[in-house]
Amino acid sequence: MRHTNFFRAFLFLCVTALTGGLSRAETVSPPPRPLYSFNQSPLIQIYGLPALGESHVMGPEESTLAVHLQIANHFTGASTSSETLSLDGETRRLTLHWRQGLPGNREWGFELPYVSHNGGFLDMSIEEFHDLLGLPQNGRTDLPRNRIDYRYARQGVNLVDLNHAVSGVGDVRLSAAIPVTMEGASKGYTAAWRASLKLPTGDAAELLGSGSTDLAGWLSAATTRPPDKWNLYGGGGLLLMNEGNVMPAQQRQFVAFGTLGLRLKFLPRLSVNGQLDMHSPFYSDSELRQLGRYAVQGLLGLDWEFAPRTFLAISISEDMVVGAAPDVAFNLSLAMPL
Image (tube, rainbow, N blue to C red; front, side, top):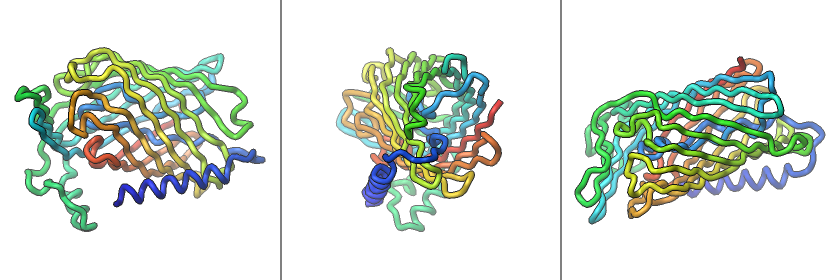
């Protein structure tokens, strides 16, 4: 029921934004900044699934350094006659993200992540929150708190088995972007083509990387209506992966992904965002929804420009398709000009 209500509210806001804002405005605002987010499931975050990124390209004299912290709590499991899956633990991802504008309306950058898998500290708080709202625990209270158990077995053979804390450098990503058009902002929108190349620098055996080289290409677009109006942003694209080292027989070679979001600036330097992230399955030949279903995450967040071009964004995400993404994830981003 709570997922249905979230979708209804989100679709209502989308329709309101579209019907109220497709006419050309006298003034435009800077394009909205999407929340930095992608699926942090231990078996998904190892691949090159990108965050949407901004819909405009930086100028040749501009550069930005950002730090992103994502903390995701996992508690899901399932089994069939041939498969058994358990994902119980926490994933923390700390990413250093740099972007630089280039002459000719080009942009490039890189992301350097540091990934940790452990038992975490959120289990008790989540259980108390569920009790407060009268939500089911779905077996949380039947198992020890703050443990790590990432395990997938097929035909009795363990293909993933991680039951101890690990941390290390993840898979490095290189990125590039070009604008779709130079005249979009004056017409009420901005759009950019973006691409990302993920390199296999993380340890696949410890789920710090996938062992594959991944290439993603996508469109990011946004409206630029006046600041007191809702602005829409979103986009989508395709992720191509060669064979990695995590469940290679079931890994798909192509994954589609997309994002749809709304932004309202309700104070001069403070905005609220609602966002949906989604993608097609990363694995085939599985009856488990955690592996073989489309994933959708719903996010709510705040974006605060507390100094010129310096932003602090805080958001929380929830899995809209239960088990296909973390039960809950917290995202914190700090971006500043260089």
